[in-house]
Amino acid sequence: MGQPGTGKSTFLHTFARLYADRLLALPAAGSSGANLGYGGSYGGGERGLSVAVQYDFAFGQRGRGVVRLIDTAGLPDGLPSQAFEREWLVGTLKTVYVSDVVLHMMDAAEAGDDLAVAVAEVDRVLAAYGQGRPGYALLANKMDLPAAQWGLLRLRETFPHNYIIPVSALQGTGFRLVEGFLARQF
Image (cartoon, rainbow, N blue to C red):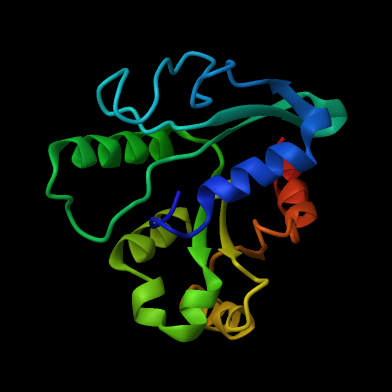
C-alpha cells in the first residue's frame, strides 16, 4: 500500500520474477492478475475491490507459511472526488485492516527532494497504525535514484519507531531484506 506512483506494482512484479520458485499460483491468463477468490480487477468485480494483481508465495520454515502479496490502489492524501475512487480506497483500507503483514511503500527519492510531498497525512496515519505491529514494514523505494539516500535518512527521522527496508523495485535491490522480514512472520 502507499500513495500513487511509489512503485507498488513494479515491486510486486519484480518480487514475482525474483521469487518465481516460491510462487504457488499464477494469475489467470488474460486477466489483470486478480485470482484466488477476489474475482475481479480495477473497475469491475466486487464493490470496494482494491486488488489489481495478487500472488501467493511460500515463506517461513520449510515454506509452510503462505504470503499473499496484493497490489492495492494508490492511497491519495484526502478523500477522492470520484465514487469509484472512494470504493478503491475503502477496499484498500479493508485489505490493510485484515492483513497480518503490511508493506507500506514510500518514495525515498521524493522524500529526499520534498519530504512534505513524499510523506502525506495518509502515510503518517498508516505508519502510526503499523507502529508496534510485528507484520508492518515501511519500504523506502526508488533507492536507485540520487536523492534516495538523503530521503531514506529523512524517512528514518520521520518514522523512528517503524521498521524501514530500503529497496529498488526497478532494480530488485533490498529484496533479500524483504524476504527475511516475510519469513520471520511465520
